[in-house]
Length: 342
Image (cartoon, rainbow, N blue to C red; front, side, top):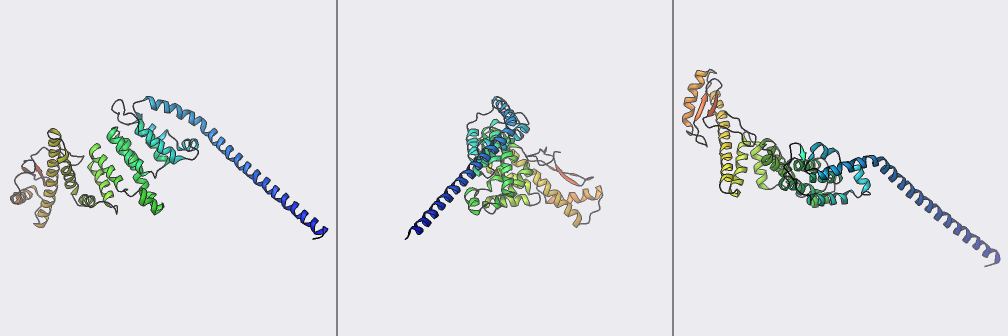
């Protein structure tokens, strides 16, 4: 290679080196600019949230001192924006910490007043908003709030939010996630049903939750059978009696067990009355009985010959000719919010 060729190679080498240095400087400038913008954005967001954060910190001190928290305060006072900002985007890790924090929270020093929530409910409420797909937290947290802390409203709110997320969002997530993390998803409406039935005494809402659980493709067979009972006309009484039948053997002997036995018998009386009125109405239509009190009374006297003389609690059947309704001498009481008094 001649002198001219050597000079050309040297010039090319210098040009390439200069290009590399210029590219490195550009990359460094872009990196620095990106870092600056990131820091500026974080500072801006933190600056915008700082007044709220100061307010929330004052509310936090109030929460830590109070035995219970107003329900509206528990739901609305904890913004997820500041939590995500302060956790540097690690919302799921923060939700884990909040779950653990709730589990070590002391029980309320007094029974919660109507409209109040436990302090643990505040932590779990925020964790739910940060990580709505955290199945174990919603499942176990709802039971912990309602059973251990006697915060039924907090537990019901937590499991209801998770169940709503299951119905509206879970299907958009990968199947592997659904199979691994949410394989027991049918248990969420079961927990709802449990809380509605035994804590809220609301068999109607419990029945809706049981039906929802029974419709899940992976629901156990016994649950599907129970859901079908709620589906059938008048089946709410039979389903309620069956649930109580499961509970009676596990109840403590004495007053607790006797109370359940009576509730079950009362539900059976309500079921008998419902069925009797359905059957008698059909009997009147089939016989084309005139819709007068006298005609209905004569029809009832014939109809009652086919009946057992007493209801499940020993009461005698009665009949009101004016309304055409079958009744009983048993003093009727509502059970789990269903049935009418007499």
